[in-house]
Length: 186
Image (cartoon, rainbow, N blue to C red; front, side, top):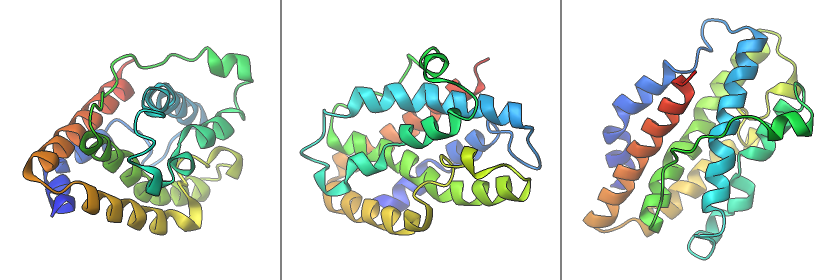
């Protein structure tokens, strides 16, 4: 099963990237702002790069609903105006998906982060962070579980052969590594 393969193949990546996000036990608001800026610098160009390339193959995924940049923009508007936001650094070393199994592998990382984001959101609220800066980690809110299940259904329906599974696993690992590299860059 592809989900088991992805989970096992990226377990070390998942653990490692958690160390690049200094959220626990406590984070100051300015460090949180910088973390959001880093995510913006990764997700914004990544979504632009791949937004149209796979529209037919992923129409059942409701990709416009899965974009992360609108929630990042909401959070960052607390700290920045549009001009300052547009000037933030953008990652140039992005994962490249040249097939839909690779796209599904990359989405495994991005969609999976919405699950962990629920824990992070609760932590941020406990620390007193205002809701106005907690949209990104909140994922899809109450719909997060349903959106994850929808993604898994599509993943399992479209990544079938050994070759496709290998492409998806490699893309997931690459996405984790490039995101972590970007998050750790000063």
